Image 1 (cartoon, rainbow, N blue to C red):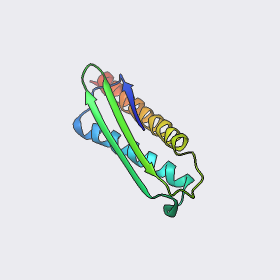
Image 2 (image 1 turned 180 degrees about the horizontal axis):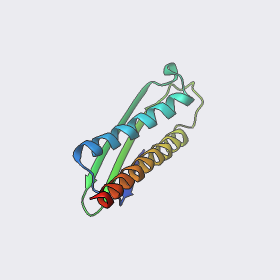
Image 3 (image 1 turned 90 degrees about the vertical axis):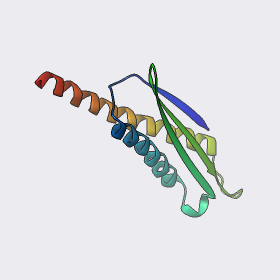
Image 4 (image 1 turned 60 degrees about the vertical axis):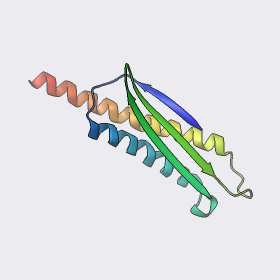
Length: 107
């Protein structure tokens, strides 16, 4: 499942962009393993890409494979994990925006 979030917030440096991608990946993996044990996950891959053009876009791709005997709605689980990741990224961006605003006011 792939999802793109359009983010129209502050100017970010390269380090902050990488940090956002890592934050999203960590949140997704953490969420999935809150709901499945390691033995219930056959394969998992989380890829993030950030594109800066007219808007800031965070593209997240999640591949999750579970054994056939594991009774879980994989699509729903991935969707929920993506929502949690988006919330975390949005919270971090608001924090960055607040810091940037405070910095500009103090200059």
